[in-house]
Image (cartoon, rainbow over all chains, first blue to last red; front, side, top):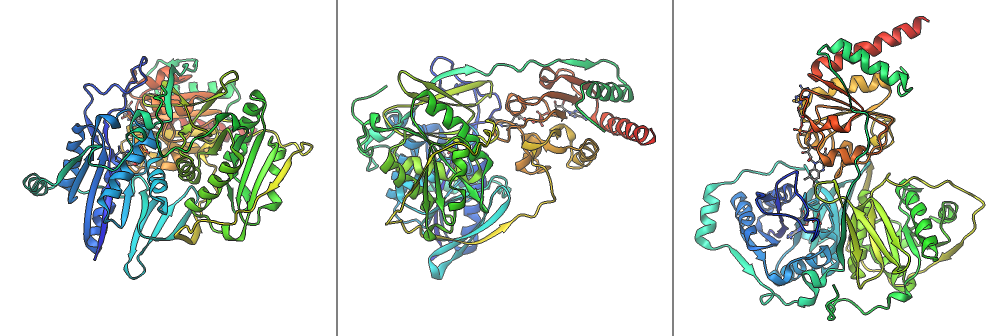
Length: 269
Length: 351
Ligand SMILES: Cc1cc2nc3c(=O)[nH]c(=O)nc-3n(C[C@H](O)[C@H](O)[C@H](O)COP(=O)(O)OP(=O)(O)OC[C@H]3O[C@@H](n4cnc5c(N)ncnc54)[C@H](O)[C@@H]3O)c2cc1C
Ligand SMILES: Nc1ncnc2c1ncn2[C@@H]1O[C@H](COP(=O)(O)O)[C@@H](O)[C@H]1O
């Protein structure tokens, strides 16, 4: 009865000016407040809507250092039933292949699930890799950019509408499956304090280490990551004229600009 | 950093057996996607540097009439899997075919245009091959001695580029941002080889495309192809701000676009977002209105010939990245610009 859904969420630095340590090539996280990746909140919202409609459960999973518990608490506040944090020193330094490996192992251990939902991409790495990679590890069908999911209980499948650059597509997909949600599809619901309290009382967040998971440590973290950042360099600034009109008169400013653009043959009204 | 012990999920490979630079040919409605053609130029360049071949791969049905096209754009070999069973796209099905081709032919690198379909497909193939993949790369560097293919992408901050190296595994895979590389010249005199492949056992994708519904948009130039772009940011204050930007764009024969904050606010669709997580644009003139000029935004307008900034804050970083700047409220400046252009048009008509 209903759908047992797993949602992948990531706890990401909330800033537009995150920097990279030029020596190590890693993210400087100190002093930067984190949030749940906004596109994952969209994914959580989709999961909760499906639960509202068809019944079932929603479990949020994340691979991250222990601080990401706050992220799981946030989505539990939204109505997620259970949170699992895969956290282990051996998972550190993972690229997307190694991250998706651990997440796939977490999903395998959960065992009873119908649907895995992911966000469009994360705002700190923007790879949009994890959904497809998890599907590959688990040999599941998958689709990206979903805007609507309909459960066809009798067929053990879902109907998914998704958006591309210049088309919509509708797929029928056998469950279990992995679906990532197009960004901005929904406004995520607000947190309810009562949900959070319940979560605290019932200990719905678990931390799983490599010992809890049936995995090869050599496939996780830095060791399981074929890609490494071999260098960082600065994007050279594009030289610009930097001419600023100095008077505070919109009419004159407009005239000045149009003249400049005409002079250079850039516009042809 | 090689640790000696490799992941048990990685089948052992001999990197020296891997040769050839592949590009996946995305075909939409019987037409090769521009992003795929753009990559053929890069594949040609890398292949020449590494003294190997450039390959193109087709997966689908009724594609034979397209077979020679990649050769005209720079490929030496075309691998084609043309099969009725592949009439309908499914990412795992197509991904599995490319995976199997790669197992057989062992390419050194596979590049995939970073369209929405491409971004969906590429990581699945890479993962099946248990190799690394770089997303949305914007530059490629090759080291002839070590045969390293370094894929470069803008990470956090956008002023820094991350050089990504793939160790221990092959092929080196990446999805490539559309429109950062030029489409090579089509040359029908080029020669190459077409290899038709048949794959006996296809996976059951467990999914089926039921409907394909093209979005009928008004005939509009996509922002990545526009010559003139009037772009709006959070500073517009409301969605209505774009109405007046549209008017200016129409007068100049251009299109509107926006910053991420404008997209996040729902004022303009994501496909019109300029910047690191949006699109790279190359207009003659880019007019940034109420846009602060964050590094991630400016990254997308590096190729613009001239940048104009209209911003109320004289300290806004956009001015450092602009050729022409006007400090002021856009609600006054933009109507003045519209008036000025209308005046010009009128005088032109008279003469
Ligand atoms: C990983 C990552 C990727 C990102 N990718 C992108 C991307 O692809 N594209 C992108 O755009 N951003 C991107 N961003 C976000 C980026 O850092 C900025 O937050 C965003 O560009 C700011 O948008 P804005 O300039 O519209 O808004 P703001 O920074 O809020 O600026 C609004 C500007 O409007 C001006 N203004 C206010 N009122 C008026 C008025 N009446 N008239 C004129 N001017 C006025 C203000 O002075 C201000 O400068 C990314 C961030 C991260 C972390
Ligand atoms: N460390 C992680 N833990 C759980 N889910 C993740 C993690 N990283 C990414 N995801 C999920 O995968 C999606 C795509 O992420 P990315 O490939 O990093 O852009 C995100 O929106 C999340 O739903």
